[in-house]
Image 1 (cartoon, rainbow, N blue to C red):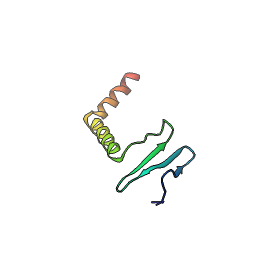
Image 2: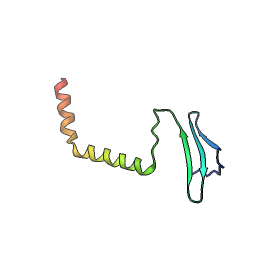
Image 3: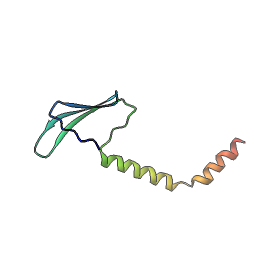
Image 4: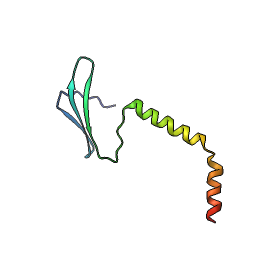
Length: 76
């Protein structure tokens, strides 16, 4: 993990398209802004984990092997 120290209004660049800017620092919080292309999803960690859990639940609730086999048999 790369650890950097930044002050308010300073930025970090990831690649050529993602910029993370420190907007405000207070006693126990840091407010950041993230500029990224629309095709790059940006989520808070807890939201990302919820999305992943929902995706797993969705996949597990489906009977994928039989659905896949049915779709192949209809095409032939």
